[in-house]
Image (tube, rainbow, N blue to C red):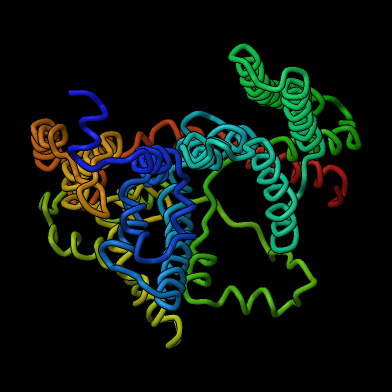
Length: 482
């Protein structure tokens, strides 16, 4: 049967073919300019609308399932979506402060990093990962990625950096700051040169840009190694100077000051932030900030002390306790989305805030395990952690597999359990083994490998204590003045 016969049989004209071609190449943003009666059909047929969605097809949700047919309803739903975006931003902030940051500190301790090296590796990857994923999505296919990236960098440096300078007193390391800015300028200028020269970036040139970052990280690692080498060298020099008779007081004082400064740069010990978190949860940190004035950066009365990891880990441990002592009580307390201390210390407005955030906090507590040296038992909850061994792989595999498959039968993605249904075959036996082996009053050794970090803390703490003893000795030799 010829094409002309087909067109006559189904009453298809050349205009229908042109319309079909137009639908396939139409931008999904053009749907918003059509009358409301046609938006559902266009949202389901336009190919571009299938590329800019993730887990929810918002166009089908609004114009097919909900059937929005006037401007007022559309504006109300836009406001609702804006509120949901704000809720997700808060959720991300809460997730970072409660779950991500404590783990980042522990990883940095285990890898023997200092603050600068942890910042240019783990913190940099954590900040850039969402942006990298967003840049790879089809919605950014025609977007000015380079301009967006430079704009984000300027916002982080100027807006975030300026806010930190205003709210938090700190001491800036001039050498590290200059090194970071020079590498930032080098990367921007190399990419700009490549784009202007050829109009596009090839694979080899992309590798060159990637190598620049690798060199930057390598220089930071070498800088940390040199810092620790000179710390050991300075200690040997101080040992030698203290054996001289009479000891050179001025030279010892200068070297002690330098040693203390270097030890502080090398120290990444976890500080006790209990008071700050309590004031933040109860809303008192705003009054603390405004009590000294908006245009005055308050200086803390004293630096936070280091957390005693082992005391927090074994605070409730008793070998005579049953292995499953208060198992369900601990499980329910771990899932309580309302902080009892913040509830007691906060006012009525703060209590409303704690109640409003309960559903989101409950979901996070249900699926994200807590590993925090500042908490009792380091956040260990036997029954909850054992259930997370089963639920977390199942949920992650289901969401990732469904996102890759991208099958939509309605306004939301169709969950695919064909792969994740087999994950309990491995996770359930593992959870049973851990449940039989572990206790409720102390976290197991594999909850986090605390030995290396404890040794690191002890080395750093002993070094700083040694500096303090030497300062006291020099003061006594110098008549009480340093």
